[in-house]
Structure formats: structure tokens, C-alpha cells
Image (cartoon, rainbow, N blue to C red):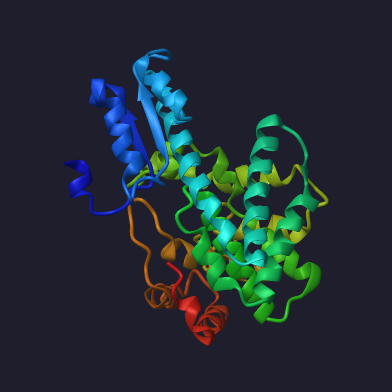
Length: 327
């Protein structure tokens, strides 16, 4: 009945032992033979580590967790399985774009691992990821790159890649080349790295944050600076972008309340792209805005964004029609 009424292809299917009971093998066969669902990742939810159900899952190499699993662990595994499916599809895209995505996701995972271990983060690894993105941008492969990252379940990664890609493209169109462009792109990749320290229930809350949750969310800037401080030989521009991308021209931003001339030019570029990315990103609790609607909102943010740069950013998007489909 569920299969017959399904309106869209799911990202993952969780098969609960308590729901299928003795019909587990028949349910698995139906799922694995279904023309739409046979490529959807499967996860078992077992009553106990050893049972006829888990033996069936092991025989078919299907991962499973037991029902006493912590919610955060379940969410983490589900997220990884969805993301793995997206990443497997990258094999079909053009090599330059594929390298840009595989390098950037590998960098994100390396940084996360080193942060947990308290180790120094090598900037050359970050720079190599940026070089791949810059090459894709220079070859005018922006749209396909942005399309291929859709569906990845790590929102911080998706948003950061989108910001880095748009920043790289923006900088390229403004005439930046070489290390200046790498620095701008690296700033985009690392600008929200502090969100790795924000609790999952706050970062992905499907609704308005409470005052306390908002205060927690705002700490991601200082958390990010603490992480970037452990990156060896990191360019000053990367630090500046992370520190200032939520500051506003009128001084109403955070965390320092900087205003006007105190805002660095790289941070002004990053603020524009960060807002555009947030407005056009797909989230579980909101649909992405079309690019033209996002730009209209940004044109009204005179106390927040540099309007001269906003106009240049809009001109850049308008000059390549495919870039307007960014959701």
C-alpha cells in the first residue's frame, strides 16, 4: 500500500523489524525489486543485535542499528547514507567538476576529523580543494557543479561549497587571479566551519530559533575562528571572511558590531554571497527562493550589504542565464 501511494522517490528507506515482523524477507524483496526503489539506500532498525532479522540484513549487506540507538547517531548514519548516494552519482559528471566536489568533501571530512582530534589543520589541503573549484569556475562549469551538490545531506557542506563557488566566480569576474582568488575561495569554504560545533537540533531546527538557540547559533563565528586558528599558514583574508561575514554596514551585525569602513572588502563580497546562498539554499523547512526573488530581497538590504557590489553580483548572474537556476 505504501509503495502504491508513494508520490516521490525517498532519499532513504528505514525498515523497522517491529513493523515488518515475520514478513521482513518479503518486504526486502519488494523493495529491492521495485524499479524506483531498488537504488534507494536501505537501513534496518532491529530489536536486538542478533536475530533472524539481523541475519537477513547481514546476508544482504544492509546496514542496521538497534532500536536503543541514540537519536543523534541515527541521524548521523542516515545523513551519511544519503550523502554517499549523492557522491556516487558524481562519477557521471565532467572530470573537472567531479574533482572540485570530491576534493572539497574530502577536505571537509579531514577538517572535521582533525578538529575532533585537536590536531593542526594543513592549509595546503584546503588550498588544493580551492584550486579544483577555481579551475571549474575558470572553465565556466559553475552551473553543473552547483547542480551536482544538490541533495547532499550535510547542509553546512552544501552551503559552504555554494558560497565558495559563487565567491570564486564573483572574484574571477572582478579580476582576481592566483593566490587572491584561492584565498577568497578558501574563505568561502571555511566561513561557516564553526557550525560544526553547533548542536544538531539547533543547526537544523525546522522553525524559528528561541532567543537562547539564536545566541548559540551566533557563537559559530568565534567557534570558526578558533578552528581556523589551528590551520597552518592560513592567509589573513580567510580569517577576515570568517570573522566578518555576518557584520553589517550599519553596525547591526555580529559578533563585533563593525560598521562602514571597518568592513574588509573580501568580507563584503562574502556577506553578499552568504545571504544569496542562504536565500536560495534548499532546507528541510523551506523551499529555495528563485534567484531573481533573492536578488530583489538583497536590493532592499541597504543597511546590511554593499549595494555597489550587490549590483555587480546581480550583473554577474544575469550575464550567464544558467546561473539564475541556482536552487
